[in-house]
Image (cartoon, rainbow, N blue to C red; front, side, top):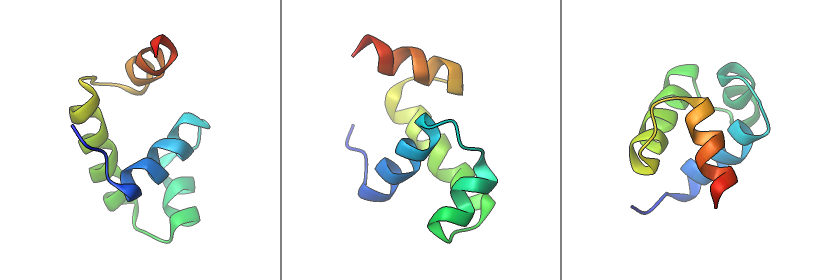
Amino acid sequence: MHITRREQEVLNLLLQGKANKQIARELGISDFTVRDYISSIFHKQGVSSRSELFAARLKK
């Protein structure tokens, strides 16, 4: 599935180990919006947690 530009921005910050609140501050969006983006990223990547996401990204 296609990841949007904004999801890619969130993903990059997520992979840097940033917390939702840090991501929200950096991108100027709400914590709730960050949570929605992360949920969408997880769904599109076929994972259910940050650790699974990190592991899946390492395999690529």
